[in-house]
Image (tube, rainbow, N blue to C red; front, side, top):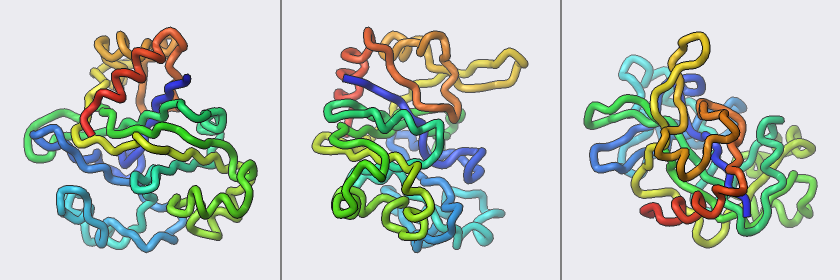
Length: 238
């Protein structure tokens, strides 16, 4: 079994804000902007789990301008699919049935004071993974029809040769409560960054000393930690 951690969702580098964390531990998963501008879902017409339109989580000064911005809703937690055509995510094609793809995101206190940090927000119990070309054409709409990269023909046509897709099965979920995994740190130049916290390193390991978990490549849990990490993730509140 393999366990891999992947950062997703809006952040200050892609969208300009953090996702919302609430005092009761719940959160709002806010997708990144759609760079293609093809999705009918926008920050202004899409509601989150807490009943607010996603646009409400942006500063008032930005709302009018960004209200019509289409969103890139990926991963999606209705049929449990994830897709990415970029080289850093290409290793996800090696996931197999029974592996865990664990998603974390940057969140900040919304209705209370809480510094920005990184939190586990959900995970897939993987059933299938591979490049788009490894799936029969009739399989793509059946397995991945709700995924951003597949549902838009122009996107799929452009990305098919390099697109990696992952399908989650029973047991996959978007958590009810976020679980913090980061603590503040600094790089060699003194710049502030997020590192895997000491407590979470006891569960997930330290990735051979690469404890920075900013917007980074997938973080693969070393074999000696996979059973412990999987048990922890599957114990989280859904």
